[in-house]
Image 1: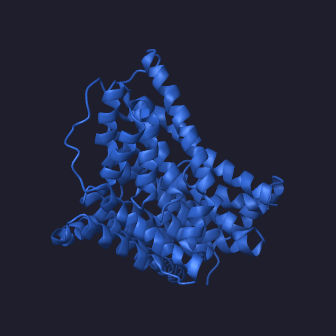
Image 2 (image 1 turned 120 degrees about the vertical axis):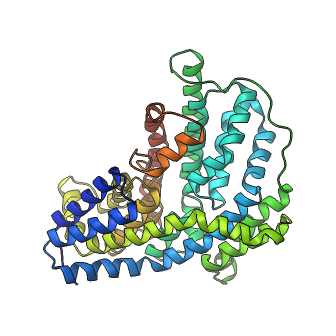
Image 3 (image 1 turned 60 degrees about the horizontal axis):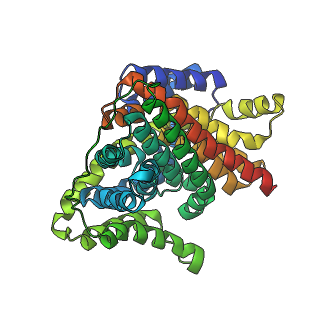
Length: 423
């Protein structure tokens, strides 16, 4: 395979970012960046295309697992199970702890396998209704959802976790479990930050819109709680069999199995095709994005970027272990996506980290957590999807961004501290 220069790899990545900012479809932007980066990096057209195809081929196992995860996503959203679980949590905790209830509900929804942006869009009406009862302000509500979603994102059988587990050769459940403590600490930080913003809003120190006051719609609807939780419970149980009984069930089987159990348990068997179509529509974009991510990953893997980053860490007197979180921090910020950034970082640097003697499970967990720091930059879809879910302006959403970044930073720092104590 050809070796490309670091300059070419970085130039290609920079071009992809510019094209995304120019509203070019991200997958096309990544393919174009990979092609230009390979040529600028000293490779000919044939070798560049070969590296791109090789990178995309390496992404196929992850893409397949993500495609079938749409069965679970479609089931949870289509049957109303995601909203039912969130309502149960908010009802149990009550309006006095409304921000904590909203954050926890979003965490558990994201942790059940629903993509973070879909989780927030799905739960936003319920969160706003709870906010009306408690008299909360929209910035605090959104941060509670964003922070809770970020915490749930790193303990979920979602595309990020699947990509990391594939790259490092671990079961998905092990990568999920490794980040439970960072996720819980991040949840606590989310509640504290959301409460601080709420107090500033109430004191008139933050220009914002209140949700007013009122009651949550009594027409709760949705399936029974036991049925709503059946899908995620089935998926986690199947994924865990390998750890307890030596029977390894691949996510390609466990994720759709959980979705089908949820559909049947909720009494929606006759609407199975509708839920499958809904789930496919939710994951198709991510799957195509990862194909584009694979092309530029192929160029980066075959470039000198890996060695140059290690040299830079050495010059800064940082251990090579720092490459785990730093790579996903930078790449998720560059792509404006946790999925793309974490996948690109794990595909590129997993082998280097393992060969350097870094404990691979910790590296997987820290790399995963690092992808939640700068994933909400304005050139990514998550920024705009979350703002739109509560009717927030771009300017107001930008004010929330630093606080969401702090939540992601918290989980990353906690993962790093766990590694230090592990040593």
